[in-house]
Length: 348
Picture 1 (cartoon, rainbow, N blue to C red):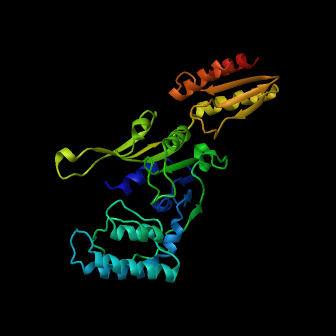
Picture 2 (cartoon, rainbow, N blue to C red):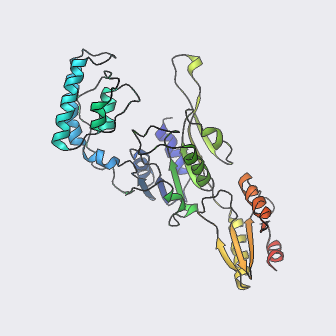
Picture 3 (cartoon, rainbow, N blue to C red):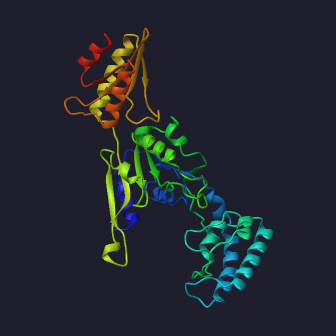
């Protein structure tokens, strides 16, 4: 089963999610496929890397591709370094193109003529720096025009943290698609690198939300994400030239968090009871702190944090236990409530 079928199966497990956010954007492939598979949902593509401009400039890039492909054919083919005289000709073509259009799709051009994983971000950088030029089997066939690629998407350009803290996104009805850069990505194919602090923040923010996280064994984050409860892991066998080179490789990890209906009913009943007796109730959503209690009740200088659980069966996660213990150490009242009777006793 290919990734598309796995992705489709994953989306079918989130029938109650009405908003799907491709948080790290990239080429918009996840958002594009989500829109196709879930036309009932609002799909948001965070085009943080301004990929839209690259799409809009495809006709110009195709014109350049034909010229570069013709020059590369003069090398005689094969995986080898590009001769210096061909490099000189390529630089002149790129220089002329940049002067004519005032734009160069550096990431795409890098994939044509540089060794795998190397990129240049600006024309000036390309002219000044010494790069390892390597022949690729570049075909002159044009890239197709993305006439309908963005149809139906809500396109924005925001810092990724915004989506986790903006109250417009209902926690229970939003699915976060997460395909972030690896640690300290050099920034050539992304606007910015992901530091350890960024990854730590992401773990904290995604912990109480519906998510589908794309990763593989190159990412250190997989060792932490395994600590999350209730996550489904799709694991693929990584290809290799020998058996010893093959290894398990995470493809995507997702979790569907829906508050148990009995918990909702208990929380609603208790909150109504508290308000009738003059308590101010605050729903603690989108705080960015995984495991924070469900509600805060305030009255006459008193502050009570409450985590609601399913009567008889609900249990605390590691993060929830951590927050209850921490709040208690800070001399706040922080309790887990399973029944209405317990709640009445708590706020009497």
